[in-house]
Amino acid sequence: MNLIRVALPLSLLVVTACSKKNEGVKDEQINIHEQVHQLSPDSLPNNTISGNMAMSQIASTPNKVVLTGLPQHRLVTIYKSKANPIKENESYSFRKIYSEADGISSEEHFMPGIDLVSGYNMLNVAHYDLSTEKLSWLFDHPVLIKSLYYPSYVQDSLNKKPITRNFYVVSVYDADTNADTLINRNDLRRLYCFNSDGDKRIQMIPANYSVIRSQYDPMNDVVYIFARQDANSNGKIDKNEPLHIFWVALKQPMEAKRLY
Image (cartoon, rainbow, N blue to C red):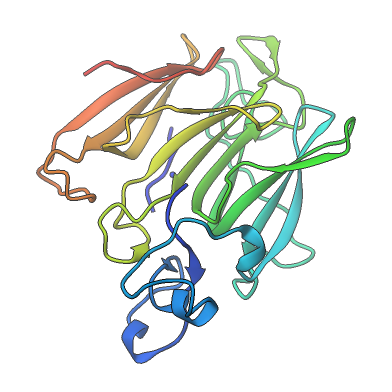
C-alpha cells in the first residue's frame, strides 16, 4: 500500500517556455532561469535565481474545490493554465488501497480517513475557511506537487471505529536542489504535514532526503516512509545512496522518527 508514489519554498519559478534551449524539457517541470529575464529583465542580474515570485506572477488556474471531511475547510487545487490536468466535468478518482479484515467498505479511500489527489503540473493548493471566509495558500510560491492527501469527505472507520483526520499531507518538489535551473523529478522530493487551518507546517522527513515510497500499518495506524539520503549533497538521489525507513503515527503526525 503506497501512501506516496514516486513519479510526493525557494527560488523564482516560472512556467517553461518553448525555446531551443528548452526543447528537451518535459511538461512536469518548472524552468526557473531563462524566463526570469523575460518577466523582469531590469531587476535581476545575469545568472541570478530569485525566490520572490508570487502566485500572481505565474500563469495558473483553479481546477477543483476539494471537499474535505472537515466541514468548514475546503481546498482548491491550482495548476499551470495550459496543463488541462482534469476535464471540466471529471471528478477525482480514489483507489481502494486499504480495507478492513472483514471486508471492503462501500466507500473507497486511499487510506482509513484519507483521500488523495494526484498532482501533475499542480503549482499550489489554496485553503478556504467557510466560517471566517479567509483564503490562504499552503505554499507561499509556486511548487510542483506530486500528491495531496486530505481528510476523506465521507465518514470512514478504522477497526470498526469512526475516524476523522484533521490534517493534510503534501508530497512535493519545492526547490531546485540539484541546481540545474529546473524543478522536476530530478530534485529531492519533500513531505510536509499541514494542520487543518493550513497555517502551520511540519517538514516530516529531513531536508537531505528524498521520499521514495511508503507502507501503511493498520494495526498501529502508522505509515512507514522509505527515503534515500542525499549522502553526497549533490541535490539529487543516486541509486547507490542509502535507503532509510522512517515512521509517522497518523493519529497525530509529527516529524518522522527513523526506524532503520
